[in-house]
Figure (cartoon, rainbow, N blue to C red):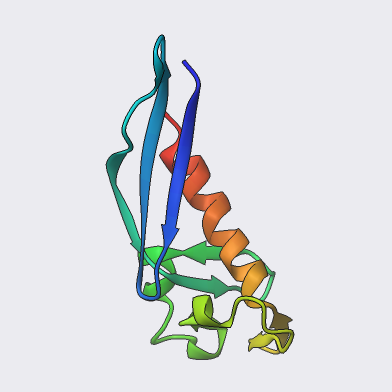
Length: 105
């Protein structure tokens, strides 16, 4: 059954909803119980973690954590995570890809 996944990337938390195609059109969006902190961690090997998993890295490696990047989407000046420049758009894409996989029915 076709569906559309809606992702609301908020400043501090990100939420997900799904709408399914029915015989008469699209259903109303239904929020999923999936919501995560809007946080991304970039490991030295460039592996990423998001949400609660990323937040757990904050104390041990705060230079590799990005928070508050949503307000910087469209800004050409990158954030620097552990010496690696990352645009806010790239960080939002990492978060969205994670949620797309996690929110798939």
